[in-house]
Amino acid sequence: MAEVTSVAETRPSSHRFRRARNRVPVWHLIWLVLAALVFIVPIYSVVQFSLTGVQAGQSPFHWYLTVFDDPMFRSSFWLSIQISLETVAVSLVLMVPTVFWVHLRLPGLRPVMDLISILPFVVPPIVLVVGLLPFLEKITWLFVRPEVLSLIYVIFALPFLYRALDAGLRAIDLRTLVEAAESLGAKMPRTLLRVILPNLRAAIIGGSLLTVAIAMGEYTVASLLEFSTFSVYTYTIGTSTAYEGVALSFISFIFVWGAMLSLYLLGRGGRNAAAVAITH
Amino acid sequence: MATIELRGLRRTFGSVVALDNLDLDVHSGEFVSLLGPSGCGKTTALRIVAGFEWPDAGEVLVNGRDVLGQPANKRNMGMVFQAYSLFPNMTAQHNVEFGLRVRKESHEKRAKRARELLELVGLGTAMDRYPRQLSGGQQQRVALARSLAIEPSVLLLDEPLSALDAKVRVQLREEVRRVQLELGITTLYVTHDQEEALSISDRVAVMSDGRVEQFGTPAQIYNGPRTAFVANFVGTMNRLEGTVVSSEDRVVRCGPVMLSVPDPTFNHPAGETVELFVRPEDISLELLSNGNKPAPGLFDGRVTSLTFLGPVTRVGLATDLGPLLADVSSAVALDLAADTVVAVRLDSTALRSIAR
Ligand SMILES: Nc1ncnc2c1ncn2[C@@H]1O[C@H](COP(=O)(O)OP(=O)(O)O)[C@@H](O)[C@H]1O
Ligand SMILES: [Mg+2]
Image (cartoon, rainbow over all chains, first blue to last red; front, side, top):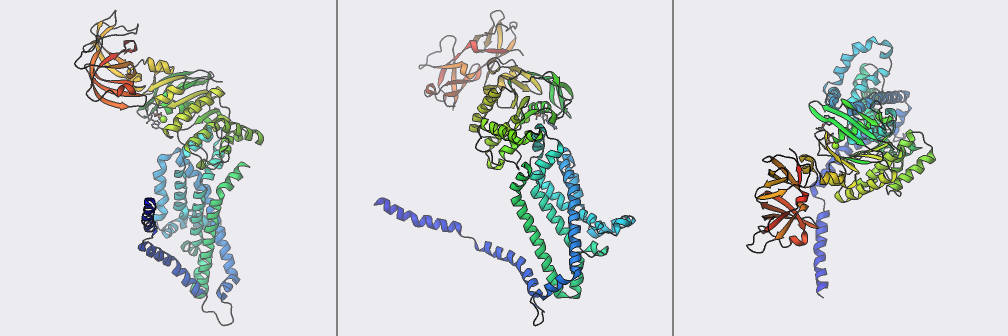
C-alpha cells in the first residue's frame, strides 16, 4: 500500500520535470523565425516577382523560358563554369602542396602565410586589378583570353581556399600521419595521395565550393576586361528587362545551391567511397 | 633478428642539449626501455633511430651497420607513436596492409597477414572498423599490428600507452610484451613510467639530461641504483645522510643510530659524509607498549601520515634520522594512528650507498 502511494506521488513530479526540460524558450523560437525570414523573404520576393508581368495566355514561367532560349544565356553560363573550374584547378594545384609543405616542414612560416592570405581581403579587388592590368596587358595572348580571369580569381579565392586547407590540416595530426607512412616505407607522393588528401577531402571540397562561388559571382573585373560572363550577362539583362533579370538571379541561386548540396553529399558519402577507391 | 647500438649520440636544439653522448647496446631479441622524466631526450633518441631526426654527432648501428645514411622509409623499422597515428580514412585492415601495399605484396598475402596480425593483437573481429570506431587502446593495438606487418628489423615504441587510462594501460603493456616475446623482435620502448618499464623490459636504461644514468635489468635498477638520480626516480627511496665512523667495518652514524653498510665496495674514510638509501618496504615497525624504549638497534618514530595503497599502507614517520617512509601490511597499519610512537627497524642488508 505504501509503495503504491509513493509511486503515485513520484509520477507527476517526474513528469513535470521532463516537460520543463523539453520546453523550448520562446525567445529561441523568435530568433529562429527571424533568421528564417531573413533568408526566405528575399527569395520569396524574387520568385514572386519573376512570375508576374506575364501576359494572358503565356506560361507563368514565361521569363524563365525566355532566358533559357537566349543563346547569350547559355554561352555566358558555360563561360563562367569553364572559368570557375579552371580557377579551382589552378588554385588547388598551387595551394594544396604549398599549405601541406608549410604545415609539415616550415610551421614557422604559418603566420606569414596567414598574413599573405588575408591581403586580398584588405586590398579591394579593384585596386588589385588596376595594379595588375599594366602587367597583364603586356602578355597579349593571355590578356584576350578568359583564362586571364581565372588567374585573377585564383588570387581572389586564395584567402578562402587557404583558410579551408589550413583548418583541414590543423584538424589532423599531420606530422604523425606522415611519419607513420614513412616508417612503413612510403615515399612522399604516396603519403600525400593516399593518406593526407583523403583526410583533407572536406576542406578541399569546402574551399573549392567557395572558389566556384567567387568565380561565378565576380562582376567588376569581368566587366572591366569586357568578358561576357554569367554575372555580367545577368547585370546587362537586369538593366534592360527587370523580369528576366530577376528570373536569371533565381536560376543562378538554384544553381549555386544545387552545386553546394551535391558537393556536400559527395563529401559525406565520400568517406567510405574514398576508402574503397584507395584500396581497390 | 637485429642488434641496435647507439654510439656517442649528441643532439642539441639551440642551447638545449637533448642528447649528450648517449651510448646504448640492445641485444638481438631484447626488450629495452628508455626510462626517464619528461624532457630527458628519450623521444629524440628514438626518433634518431627511426630516421626522423639526426644527431649532431655519433652513430646508430643496426646489426653492426650504420643506418644514419638511410631515410626513414628505407630503414624497415616498426614504429608506434605516442599520438594516435592510424590513417583515419582506412579500416583497421587497410591500415595494417599499408606497408605491404608499399612493398607491392599480392592482395591475398596482404589480407592474410593483416588478419594474422590483428588476431595476434586481439582484434580479429574489428578488421573493418575505422579508427574513429575504435577505442584508444584498440587504436594502439592496430598501430602495433601495422608496425609489425612489414616484418621490421626492430620495433620502436614512443610512450604508446600514455594516452590510455590506467587499467587499459596495464593490460596493454602486458600484451605488448607478449607479442614481443612471441615474435622475438628487438624492441626499444620509451616511457616515463618506471613501473611500466620495470614490469615489461629485459633491461632498462634510466636516462637523465640526455645521458644514460644506469643500464641494467629491472632487478639491478631497482635493487642497486648506482646514482642518486636513479635511486630517486625508480620507486620510492628514503634518503639518509650519515658520517662514516669506521672505514673497515663500513659503519655509518645517522643521527643516534649506527648502521653497517652491506656493500663490500663501500670505501669511504672515517669522518666523511655519505648518502644512504633504503626503500620503504625495507623498514619495519614494531608497536611499543606504553612508555617502553625501543630494543637495541631500533629507534623510535612518530607516525605523521598514513596512506592506504591496498595491500600495504605507507606510513610517514618523524624520526631522529629525519622523515622516513615505511610500507607496512595494511592489516598491521590498522593499529596505527597519527602520533602513535613506534619502534623503527631498518633492514641494514637493504641499505644502499651511493658515492657522491
Ligand atoms: N624539435 C625540437 N626543437 C626544439 N627543441 C626540442 C625539439 N625536440 C626536442 N626538443 C628538446 O629536447 C629535449 C628532449 O626532448 P625529448 O626527446 O622530446 O624528451 P622526452 O621524450 O624524454 O620527453 C627537451 O628539452 C625538448 O624541449
Ligand atoms: Mg617524449
